[in-house]
Image 1: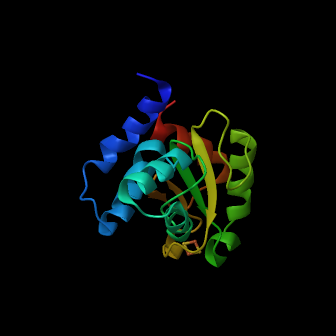
Image 2: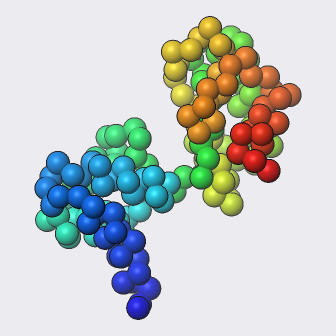
Length: 157
Ligand code: FES
């Protein structure tokens, strides 16, 4: 089996779970996202071929839906809320600590593909400010001195 066939088959495995219809496109892209932590360009090309939809439409969906990313993301996502309440309670220091300790910039991914760091607007949990979300788990009253322990405790390592 050539590398190219292998590549296509990892997308086909997902595509084959769905009806060949336009209504399936978003669900397939979401499955790509779950499996590869982003929507790879090869996956878009394959989906476009199989479903007879223009790749430009799939790229537009990848850009429009927040849950989809067209660039590689880490296995774990850390979101720091930088809304007003969290900002006032020191979100900037949490962000700086994470950037320094993980050696990355906001909206970046670590070289080993382990973490992506994002800033987000108010996540509706201001009473818990400052809020950090690690892989969809909300952590309130986070402190810069504790943030790395929290990350390690949750993801292991
Ligand atoms: S500002 Fe952070 S949860 Fe509202």
